[in-house]
Length: 71
Image 1: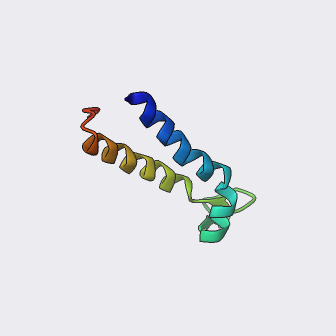
Image 2: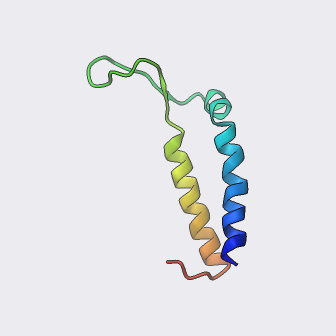
Image 3: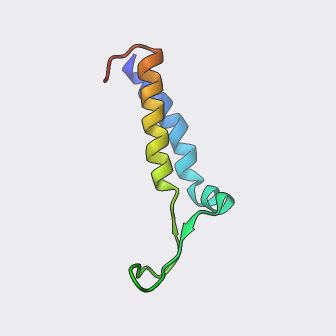
């Protein structure tokens, strides 16, 4: 049962990771440097936090629906 859920997570996340740059350009959420506290050269995508939150919600959903008792 666990192997099917791992495969499902991989199938969901690989396209998101593969098209990460296009998704961030489409959504247009970037952090720009202000040269006071932030010293990065280019704009940085803020989409990574969403991916962590998205995977956490999926994990909770599968735990509740399939009664896996992970939590």
